[in-house]
Amino acid sequence: MTQVRIEDLPEDPLGAAAHFHSVVAPALVGVSRHLPRDLMLVLPPADHTHRAWRLAAIQALARELAPQRVNAVESDDTAAIAAAHAWLEAAPGITGQVFPLDGQGAGPVIA
Image 1: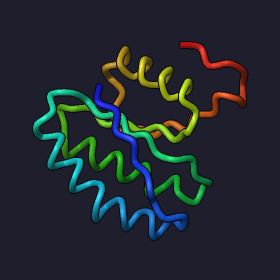
Image 2 (image 1 turned 90 degrees about the vertical axis):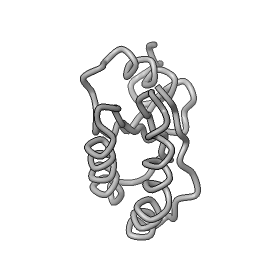
Image 3 (image 1 turned 45 degrees about the vertical axis):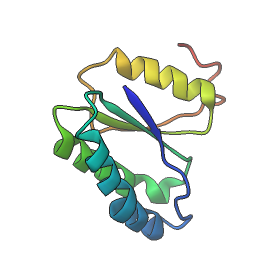
């Protein structure tokens, strides 16, 4: 699974969605056609106002790039991202999902 870190998104949800759809998504579609591996996008943490556009964008990418899987995690916690990566690698039926991660919330991350 190829991990792609998405950075430099605007703070406001509308600006972030516009940037993702106009810059990030076309680049991902272009490059992923040449990758035989599934994608896991790593998005920076954001509040609930970003949830809908992120989920819709990941679902659209998953449909566009099928049979490759596309999922995203929202986190800046390296251990949580690594654990999610390992979990997604072992879960071949999961695609089109956004997982908000919090490695501190419920206790230690279990890989």
